[in-house]
Image (cartoon, rainbow, N blue to C red; front, side, top):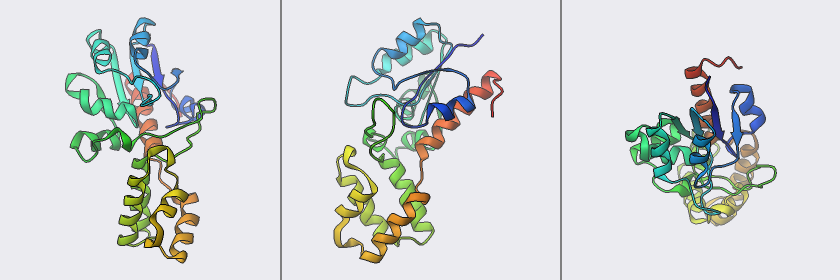
Length: 218
């Protein structure tokens, strides 16, 4: 019988994850957690969320050790996407658009997926840059903002330290690049139009695990 351990945090609510895949869900991974999961008998490890700056991040060598012991290690969305892009030639499996963007070199910094979240509730308190990128592209495609405003808002988002990235702060930091009408239109639209690519990729990874294990969910 497969023992599936998934490290999950703000990328996807656990209640939603459990609708897709039955697994042992653990908080965002820190260094040593994958080795501990291997020690608990994991046969499949899903690495979605992990710590970046609060504690030491998941080490490459522990992923490699898990793979060498025959454990299937799957990464997506956040820390998982970053590590999978670095380790897929050594046996780690990457899933999703964010993983592919890191793999291609379109994304390079862990700043793209970093955010701050409430450790008790797991609720995100800032917006990851990668989600902002997808949101601005959608807003541009729907005519909410034009090309120049898209570029100004992206530059504004990149200029902010990751814990301070919210759509309100991004718009404010962009200053005169947006007139008042565009500012209001964008902030009104973002409530329903914002993208959450990290969430989509996390769900995709869980569906992948479900499919390779024959789990019957959804």
